[in-house]
Each structure stands twice: as structure tokens, then as C-alpha cells.
Length: 424
Image (cartoon, rainbow, N blue to C red):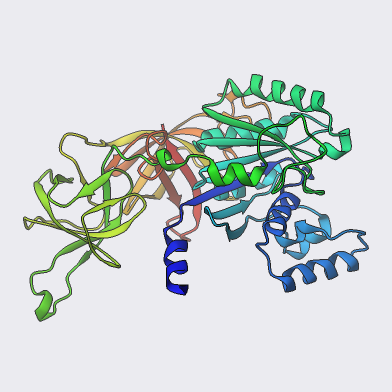
């Protein structure tokens, strides 16, 4: 029985989602309420935050303390770093990234949202759509998060007014025409009281759709994966050197996109040599096919010189191959980006060096306008830059493939991560 439950849990679909919104919009409280009402926290965890709330002189149990664990966060009542929480219901597994709302923590939001299927954008019902609502929505669009759920919070403070909800929905919808997001949902909630979080609200009978948890459990994410463009970056060549595996030569990695099947004809980049897939091994043994995000070892029928950084693809569906491309770069370091500067660059499993050819424009985070006069890119800035690499890369546009379309810039002297880029 226990084994069957464990197998069922492992087979459940995983939804990664992130929260975003202005300071004090209730992101951490919403996650705390979601965990508490779905019975996903232990009694000792609840008692700990109950005790912490009493020590702070609060009259109610502050569920935001479930994610805001840093002393500075609790002192100021804000989120500073990205906090991850894991929970599951009988229908789906979840990974939540609770990200900060401040402008100076843009890099933290980018980090937390980079792998998300869905973003929860919180809006204070009293304030409506403000600059930070637009900024976070823009970043979610920039990161190509497929689904946006706009949670209009603190509905209890506007007497659960349907007209307030409708006006905010209208304002956000008008703004969202500028974004590249095709699936936007709206839910009126009160994270503090639990209205429409896990259970439907009796205070808002005019809202006919289900609560937030029902949406998270049922929203369709299977088609979010790119199953068309076959991309397999090689991370490691496996040669066991044991008698029973005398001729074994496998290429280990994680499927970035597409579906690879036993017997498929494939091409190896950069050599351009072709072969067929002889076998696909996984941690649990041989499999007939592999797809994103599976980690597998592929064996080919022919002996081809393949090493880390190479990519296995389909002959008739090749990625872009080149040394020059533009990226939307999120700068994550206190050292400023240098026009003409040389950096280490990482793309899938490939490492190389690059030079910044041009800083085309910087995005004004407040207005979302392009600023072509300011080429100074510092911490938390977002800019479009042109890059030239020392070796050819095999890449796709980020909008088509979030794995083969992303890069990281690294300081060669300190090995610090400097920025994350999305190829456009």
C-alpha cells in the first residue's frame, strides 16, 4: 500500500509557480493560507508561527511567517530573499517560489520565476493596478511564464465589492494587451480570511469560478513543454570500463525539449554526423522514449566523437547555430556591465567566453519604456545587449525554448554569476 502511494506521488504532475506583487500586497500571507488550509503544514510548524505571532504582539496567527523566515524579513514585515515551499494535494505536486516585491530585489524575482509554469500576481483591492503590478507582470511576460493568475487580494477591506473587482480586472486587461501572455485568470480573494484560496467564499457569491487551489490543481500545463524541437545537450560521456559494460558509451544529460525514441535518426552538433538511437537508459532502467525534463543516457549505433557541450538533435529540425545573438539581460551583480567587456558564458552544458558588442537599450523598470540614452547597466537592471561568443552556440529563441534560449554570464576572476539572459 505504502509503495503504491509513493509511486503515485512520484508520478503526479508538478506545477511550479511564483508569487509577485507590491510590498504588503499579501504574497507571503497567501502562501501561508494556501499551505494551512490545504493541511500541508505540520502542527509544530503552526505552533511555532503562532508563538512567533504572539511574541510580536499580533492578535492573529501571522501565516506569512511560514515563508518569511529571515530575521530582517520578520522585523520589517517584508520578503527579501526567494523562499521555496513544497506541498502536494491528491491531484498535483507544487513548488512555490515566494519572491520579493521591492524594486531592488528584481534579480530575486527573476531567479524565482525562471522555471515557473504560472505566476500569481497579487493586487491590493484598495490600490488597484499600480506601477509594481505592471513591472512584475512585465517580468513574468519577459520570462515567458505561460499562465498569469491575477489575485485581487484584501477584498474584505472593500466590502467584497464586485464592482471593485470588475474595475481592476478591466484596468489590468487593458494593460496586458502589451504583454506576451495568452492565458490570464482573475480571482477575488482575502488571503487573511481564506476567501477563495482553498475554499469558495460565502462573502462573494457573485464570483462563480472555483477557488485558487482548484485552479492550481486543474490548469492545463502539459502543452507548456516544447515537444516538437528535439534538443539534448550532452553533459557527460559515460564509459564504465568494466568487463560487463566493455563497449558501453553513453551520453548523459537532460532532455531540453522534444521526444527522443529508440531507433530515431539523430544528428550530433557541431560535427554534423548522423546516427540512430540504439538505447535510452534512465535511473530506473531502459526506456523506449525520453522527453523533457527527463534525465537519461542515450546510446548511439555509431561511434562518434561526442563530448560535453555537444547537442543531439534531429536532422530536419536544427537549432540556430552561431556566435552572435541578442539577449534581454537581467543584471544580478553590484559590478556594472561593461560595454566591450569579456565574460565567461554558460549555455545549457556548454561553457565559453564572450564579449559584449553593444548595449542597445535599457528597460525603465518603472515605466517599461526603452531608454536608448542610458547604457549604464547595474544591479537589478534589464537591458537588451548584443553578444559574440568564442565558439558557435546551438540555440533557440527563448520564447520557443526556455532552456536552449537562456544564458548565464559569469565573472572569470571570481566565478560569480553576473547576469541571466534570454535570447531574442
